[in-house]
Each structure stands twice: as C-alpha cells, then as structure tokens.
Image (cartoon, rainbow over all chains, first blue to last red):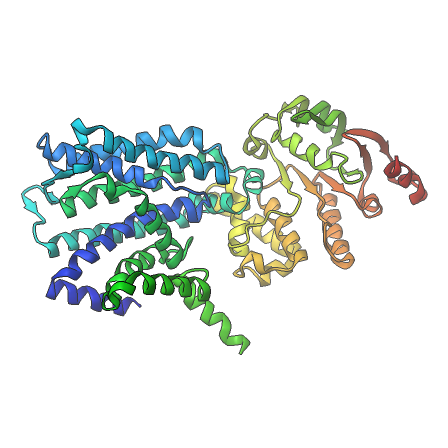
Amino acid sequence: MWGVTAALLLYVLVRGGYLTSVLQIAAIYVIFVSGLNIFMGYAGQVSFGHNAFAAISGYTSAILTTAHGWSPLSAGAIGLIGVVACAFIIGYPTLRLRGHYLAMATLAIGLIAYDVAVEWGSVTQGYMGISGIPPLGIGRWVAVSDRAILVVLLIVSTLAVLVAARVRRSRMGRAFVAIAGSENAARALGIDVARYKLIAFLISAFYAGVAGSLFVHAVGFVSPEVFGLHMVVLAFTMLYVGGISTFAGPAIGAVVVTLLPETFRTFKDYQDVAFGVVLILILIFAPGGLASLPRLWSRREPEA
Amino acid sequence: MARLLEVQGLSARYGYVEALRLVDLHVNDGELVAILGPNGAGKSTLMRALLGVLPTSGRVRFAGLDVPRGNPAEAAACGLILVPEGRGIFGPMSVAENLELGAYLLKHDRAEFARRIERVLSLFPRLKERLSQVAGSLSGGEQQMLAIGRALMAGPKILLLDEPSLGLAPRIIAEILEKLGELNREGLPIVLVEQKAPLALKLARRAYLMSLGSIAAEIDPRTVKSHDELAHFYLD
C-alpha cells in the first residue's frame, strides 16, 4: 500500500502533467476528510455543513490576497481565525441537537454559506467568482510550478493526518470515541459531553478551513460552486470508502475517490457508471472501508 | 452509622409525566442497598435523577455536600459512579481502552491508575485475558464485568448499578453478584437496582421497593419470609 503510494508520487513528481493537479485535489481532500473524521468518525456526530468552513477561509484568503494585497500566509491565518470563531458561534447552540436534527442544522449552514457567496456580489463577485489568487509561498519562496504546489500540499496533508492520529490517541480522543459510543455512559464517567463535542467540531472546522484556504491558492480560483454541496457528497464518499473512524481511512478514501474517475476515463460515457459500481462494490465487500481490509483478511484466515 | 447518600423529596418529570414523586431514601456508609420494583416503577429514572441528568426538584446530598444538578460529569467527579442500564460499554474500543476511559477523571496519576487496574483485573480475571480484544465482541456477561470494571476504574465513593443482571444467564448473574458482595465487604457502598428481587435481597442489607415513581416500602431482607410478600407489591 505504502509502496504503491510512494511509487505513484515519485512518478508524478518526475513526470508532472495532468495527474499532478489531480493529486493536488486529493491532498487537499485528505485534510478536509481527516478533519471530518474527527467529528463524524471519532466523536460520532453528523455534519453536512463543513463545506461552509472551507468556503469561509477560502473566500477570506481569496479576497484578502486579491483585493487587499495580503500575503497568502497571513490571509490564511485570518481565514482560520474566522473559521474557528464561526464554528464556535454555530456549534455552541447546534451541538445541543442530536442525530438528524444536528444533520439538518449543519446542512442549513452549508446552504447559507453558499447563498452568501452568491449574493454578496460586491465582495465575492457572485457566480463569477474570484480569479488570479496568488499561489502559496513562505517569504520570498513561492510555489509556482504544479510540482512545487503538490509538495507543499503533501507536507501539510501528512501533518494533518499525523495530528489527527495524535488527537485520537490522546485523552481527549478517547473522550471523543466514548461520546460516539454512548453519551450517557461517557457522562457517567465524568466526561463533559457538550464541551468535547464542541472541541471536536472546532478541530474539524479548522481542518476544513485549512483545506479551503489551500484549495484557492493551489487552483488560483474560487466560486460558490467550488465549496458547494457536491464537496460534502464527495467528502462523505471518501470517508466511507476509506473507512470512517480509522487512522488511514480519510487519506486512502481521498486518494482513491479522486483517482478512480480518472482511471475510468477510457469508459467515456460510462465513466460515472463504472465509478458508481466500484464504490458500491467497495462498500459491500468492505463495509468498514478500505482501511479495514487488512483486519478483515487477518480475521478470516484463522477461521478457514 | 453515618449517612453517606441522602435523598429528600426528589421529584422528576418527563414533560407532563411525573416519573418520580417525592422520593426519600438514604444509604449509610459501607451499605449495599437494593432498589426493587417492577418495570416502569421509576428505578432507572431515580438513578438518572441522582446524577442530575434530569431536571429535578428536591435534594440529593452526598458525603455532606449537595450533588450538582444538570451536569452528570460533575456528579461523577463527586464519586457517584453509575453502571448504566444496558452496560453502555464502548463497543469499537478494546477492553483496555474501555478501562482507561473509566479512569478518565484520574488524568495523569500513573501510580493510582496501575493500582486500580490491578484491582479490577484481579476481580475479573476474564477481562485480563481479553485486554486487547474489541469490547463489542465480548459475551454479555463479560461486557457487564467490563462495565463494572470500568466504573471501578473511576474510583467510585459509591457505586450505582442499574439492572446488572439484565439478559444474563443465572450462572453469570450469580458470579457478578458475588463480586459485588466482595466489593461491598471491602467497604464500597453500593446501590443495586434490580427487577429480580430474590437475588438482590440475598445481598442487600436494606431494600426499597418502588412503585409508580415513589418509594412504596422500605424492607429488611432478613424479615422477608416468602416471595409472596414481595409479589404483593408487584401486583398492586
């Protein structure tokens, strides 16, 4: 698995080309889905609205760098502060809701963000979107080429995965999983359920914000559609295909789901059908996601 | 004997339904008290009300202090630890992780953690064999042992158990009740909620009978001569 990934990366970094931009998107989704996994996987909550947080920081980055001449780093930092502040204001009341009600509330947040991006034309330029967003850079060094951008994204996404794993292993991470298991039992052990749900929400919103900001700088363009509902659908697919509540699931899911449609390009008109069939097959034969396959196999052997 | 837990006029409601009505009871230090009653008598509600999960009126005092209302996590921090109905173990986690979570309030006191886990594993040696196993794959009896073990990891000053016998084979129930007796003899006060009255009465020093949300009677298990006497309350 790791060998294949390394070989693929090496190939892309040497050859460059179209696959580079596909992998850029995959790396960004690794971050977004890793964050979603903390809230939905570890803490067992539901959110259809994390695209809103990507939109908030993405637009903040885009507007501050293009209209006000900020550097990408400082614009991104402001965006992330905004994301965490919004997540706090939204999360504090909505996280008292459970299950379907929480899902509906988060769905509304995503739709509101979309509408704001469309309607607030004087700032966001509506459907037209904002183009000419400068690429990422630190000080004088700027990641101009596709390969340089990919390297930056790979570094950030690796960090994101490692931090998420670290969170899961911490005392806080165990509290998240306890809440997912049984809120009542978690409370009986002295875990402050409301507080930890909010913290999980804030961390995952922060991840979504990082992904949103990186996206606009990597692609150089943002419009309301970029952070629309399809982003949520895609992220959910990645989360379940890769394996919800696992360490490696979000990364595997993000890479597989972004690459699969590309590999089916030869099917032309039937590309989407082939993609759908493969997704369904994965979920039938590995309901715990691709990350759970090794465990599935190792469990089957002793029985045989 | 010192009164450890004292409940006065505790009432609670679900919407318009009065689920608990003016409950008075007490538990002395070191006692094992059983709370008996048929389905729907309000036993589980009483447990939830003690921890302050529900909005309640009345008074719950523990070790001379008022138990905080509205935040069960704080009640747990006071030492009231509940083994919930249906066990509430964390299925996807390993047995070891479940036990670690029990000691959640301990934070980073490794020495105390080691002391507690040793005690739990000596009490339930079966858990020791299954430490790395996923908790959801344990048998019902083992899950109940894990739920009790996890509660013990929290260092309870009083242990509340909500129907620990539910859905278990008689042999397993006997084993678990024996362990509860052992814990109690070591000085741990226990409140045992049970529908299976005969089992609980063998163990308890005192018992309360609940009916329709209030305490119908306080009984001394030694004076209960026949089960008919109890059946009278269940049939009311």
